[in-house]
Length: 248
Image (cartoon, rainbow, N blue to C red; front, side, top):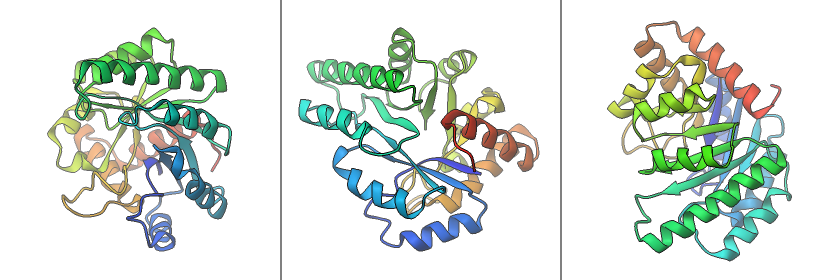
């Protein structure tokens, strides 16, 4: 299994060597860690250097960091370390609701999309309470290699995006999230990947999440789809390795 979205730079992972050890023991053969603030790049570089060939990096920009300084630092960070993708980037209409700030957020999102296309890197998208709008922006910018992370929008919008070749990563919270379960029922397995979003979106509410828990996503997808967990693992692995162009 490949955990396509985690945040290993988070201070919650003070025991990172043990976390990585448990992930490997659980059958996770690669983790894609994402930073959402350029200030986290030094720690991210330490991690991918220490766990080269196992942990891969995407560089993003939190949609609530709306300063021009952060946008500039994001652009610089894209070329300051080996990355397999751009993200997470996107829209957040849960925390940002003022119209002028939403306009700034969309402008920054479009800049992030253009940066990914120019670098020929895939996009990992945050779209909290803004699923349809984020997809509309992606379509308008001509984005093709897209992973919608922990999508909380309508399943119909997700299905339309899947038909365009977009992927959706299913977090470990699918164990208890009816919305995520509905998403799994509707989407084809060929459009899915697996994620933990560690340290959040745990399969057990209130507990710290970690990549070793990825098997909970695989099991729940298999249960909902009424297929073998081996089929889920095989297909999501192929999707993830091809999308990020990583060999494991």
